[in-house]
Image 1 (spheres, rainbow, N blue to C red):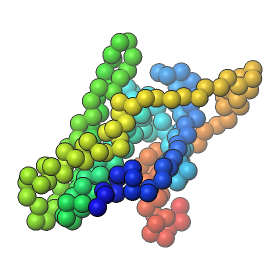
Image 2: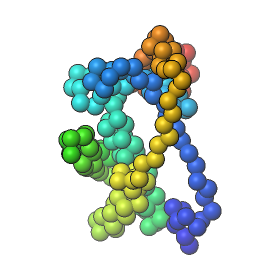
Image 3: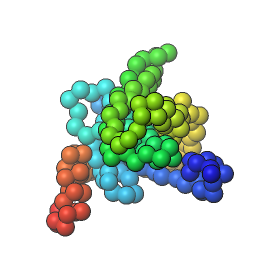
Length: 187
């Protein structure tokens, strides 16, 4: 039987996207990030090096994606080995350093605590190592990056951005509102 993550199992490629509206310079700028799912909708977005910032930043989003993707991959690996995990608690910590005069993500460390009935320690360690190797985010952290860049005529888009006010919602308020909506409350 082929594992579900095997490319020959008939699963089709898919895409996901997010968009950011950025205003200003790297250090003094700010922005808002949104996703089509509306989980992130005009959430404050700033440079990751600012200690007292509100909102999120690229390293934090990568850490969140890595922790989530790893947890799902570990659940899959344990399931394929015949185990049913009750809970997987993963914290990803990314390290940003200046390398060759540019900010670079040099490390992503995963701390994992899992509750898996009837699993032997060696089977859990094997599944965790397979999950680390097969996790899509783990595999992409050293990926080839592609880009499409386009200059707008006379900066017309930039002028529209400067004059438009961006409503910014803190991440905690967005999460609270999403939970309230799921529970039937109006926000």
